[in-house]
Amino acid sequence: MKKIQMVDLQSQYKKLQPEIDQTILDVIGSAAFINGPEVHQFQADLEKYLDVKHVIPCAMVRMLYKLP
Image (cartoon, rainbow, N blue to C red; front, side):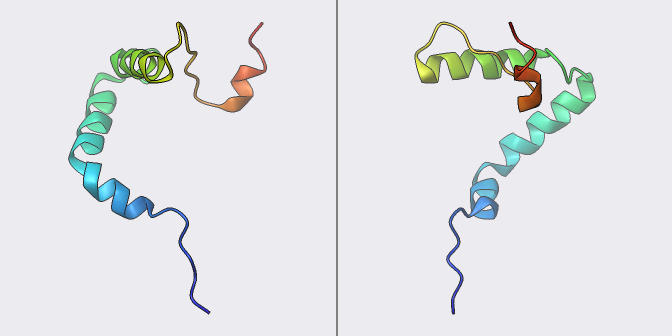
């Protein structure tokens, strides 16, 4: 029986590899893992994409339970 691959992450990564790798290197180089410029840019991009006023980026879903 042939397996059906639902999501081909390797293919998707290869298409975006230079951008992903550079962003990872930028974050590591700046050591701004929390609330750094890439996080702020992600937040702004996600707000625009979702057409909402605010989003709250967080590292783990568990952190959301602590929000008021």
